[in-house]
Length: 109
Image (cartoon, rainbow, N blue to C red; front, side, top):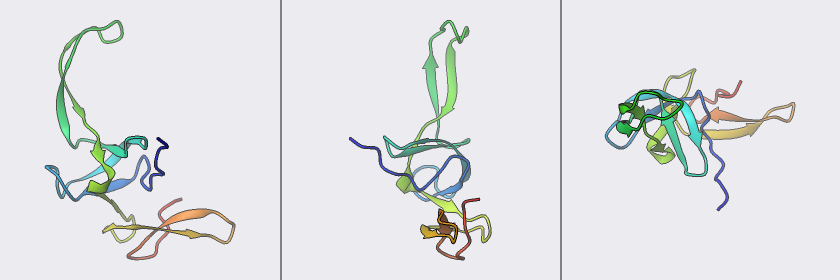
């Protein structure tokens, strides 16, 4: 199965709109396009039982962020600071960029 093209990118700030972490904000650490999921810093924490390995000498129970589905989050615009849908437009130099649907500001730098 071909991975879907993601509208969210690493480093974007998002608002969780569904699930147990509803109405919390965070920064995207990792994007998993083949699964349609993202990992957000400090959200959706789970405990994992880790065995000692060559790389990780100590085992035990570690806390880590679990992936969330992309449909459960909305991008937060840097200018208007609101959760928004993402639009696309082409600039004069031919670059295709993401834009905020509420204020029209270009999200990509």
